[in-house]
Length: 305
Image: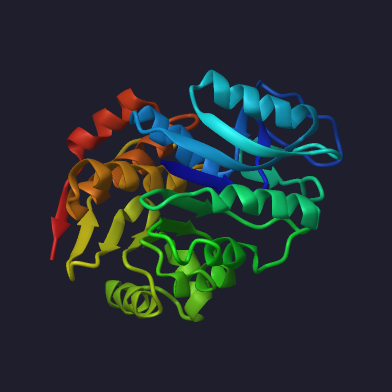
């Protein structure tokens, strides 16, 4: 079984306007609601690829019920800890001449609720996969991801981490199967400007020496690198279509890699499906559907070195 962890899921309220002016009343041209959170995005794309997963995390209030109902309606299993107080957060995404976001904090998570969550983690079995993605709520310690992985260290569980800075570095001693930093995140981790392929390679090799088995470095419109445990480097090509949405593109890549590797055991194909999922989401108004993924997959090329 694949488990995705989203500690602070959300309802993303997307408003579109011709222009947005502060200090006055603005009228939308359209509005949309989506459930959000990196782990949930991974589960959604996996479901499009006919790969089952269970979403873990916390939810609260009427927005938490909405999140669970949306997952259920999409055929995605969830096993959330239901918090007694507060509501799952609502994030506002303003799309106009520029894009702006207002992200809420989310509900308070007590230590007892966290312990209840840890007991669910303890039920993960040998051969399972866990995807840990996104930020940690303010009410939890920065060591929460490390605490999760420490409970799995004596099991044969495949670990995938998509997080930033210290959250990612703290997970490396647990030898994750895959991590997926982007160019900006590499710059933050190593304190250098990432302006050529050689620096990307040096940073990826350093992360592998620290424990990562495989590293995808996503480069947005410039494609992506995969530095694989078999000693090879792979690079995905790029496609020229209009970018409609960047939210969830990286999460889509993670899902595509999991599905591609599980299907074939081939790192080149896994990167190709990862890149197809990421591009398909970027070319869609929301997360990609299967038809768009298959369309993009047909056009993509992956090279190995």
